[in-house]
Image 1 (spheres, helix red, strand yellow):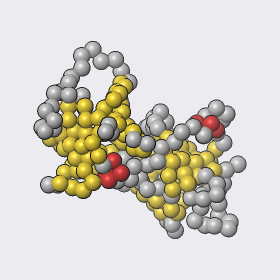
Image 2: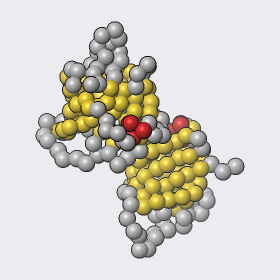
Image 3: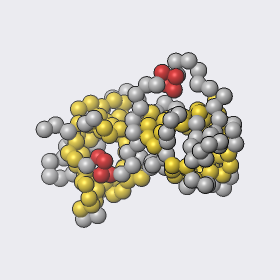
Image 4: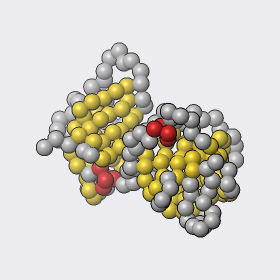
Length: 221
């Protein structure tokens, strides 16, 4: 059975953990479908993170006296023992229990995982869409909202981190600009407000998702 590594090194965790309940900061029970699963890998401070139906991320963590820092998020450890761990952040309270993955699950197969994107600078560059997928069938495409390219700056310029261009935009007239980035999400302002979840940025591929539509970007030279 997976357990927390108390003996020998108090700064490490081990085993597979999954979310079994979620509450608001005010301790009110909430329903959810994006169950969190985490695996703490042996031999170091690496972890694997996945939400149900989402991409898998791999990174390094730091365990403190009452905190768990996984780079893209920081949790306060409310309580923990060999089989149960309660985590808390600004978004809510998460009760985790240890478990053994079934055969043929992503954890068992060790499928490809993506490193978390912790800051805007990791995505800096000029990115062009080469593919897009949607969770639902679309009868008519709105080209004034469909993204064609993104410029992400290595440092803020006039308070902006970058620009998003629709397929109807001129190359020097973006409809949106990047206002901020946190929790793997780009927050846009401009023609209207939009949010893009960053799923991957490595090996010359940037993947983002918004409202069931996934955009795949590359930097073409």
